[in-house]
Image 1 (tube, protein in one colour):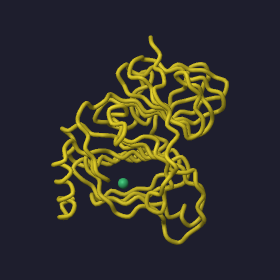
Image 2 (cartoon, rainbow, N blue to C red):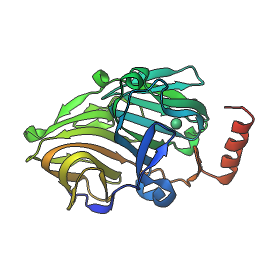
Image 3 (cartoon, protein in one colour):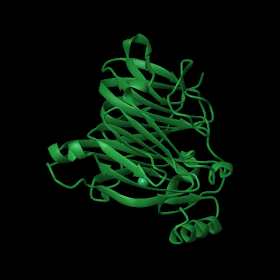
Amino acid sequence: MKNKTVTRINRGTGGHWVGDGFPVSTLFSYDTQGPDISPFLLLDYAGPAAFEPADKPRGVEKHPHRGFETVTVVYQGEVEHKDNAGNSGKIGPGDVQWMTAARGILHEEMHGRDFTRKGGTLEMIQLWVNLPAADKMGDPRYQEILNKDIPVADLPGDAGHVRLIAGKYDGKDGAAETFTPLNLWDMRLKGGKSVTLSIPEGHNASLLVLSGKVGAGGETLGKKELAQFTREGDTLTLDVQEDTVALLMSGEPIDEPIVGRGPFVMNTHDEIRAAMNDYAAGRF
Ligand code: MN
């Protein structure tokens, strides 16, 4: 057993709007950190932000994606999704949307209609997960994973619990099907407790604290702070200082070139040009 240690702490960007619905802070991005965060590409944390009641849903109008997956986890509020493959759905607190764009999808992401009418607090994350070259031009897929369908595992020593969105914890499988080995755990940790997690040697791993305070890998993390850990080591010890909500992401790096532009992430510049041409020609 060897502990993973912190390599870097990200406190997010100053914040920007995605469409008119999502005030986000970017916690990591492949454009500066490709190999260190692979198989993940980007993490945006939206909110928590209060919205007044309104008539027209806010959000992001129809836009394309190719070459990767977008994973949306809602903590507060409501998001509606609609795509050109005929999939649509509404997700609320605890629910997850795992959208595989692969060769191409056009979709819109808006606040839910009820949420829009009543107003309230929105808090969610969107994680971009890369696909191996062999799967980038595969069929699009959409996994709607509701709160009630996400397996829950208790942590030892009454330290809280883990909601297994994807991956494996203590022999239990997560809800989502993934293309490469990765873990996505929504964790609720109890203040004053300590817990040691097993995370495979060789995985890139990050921990985002949404609320609370926790010591991890030699540093202390507060709200909206993300730590990245060494690939070396197969354990991570968390010293929970306050009741904490945290998201753990880990995965086997995809050791392939990354070339991206806006909503397209491929392996070569030619493939990006092809994506732009296909989109312009209405071939999505
Ligand atoms: Mn999108």
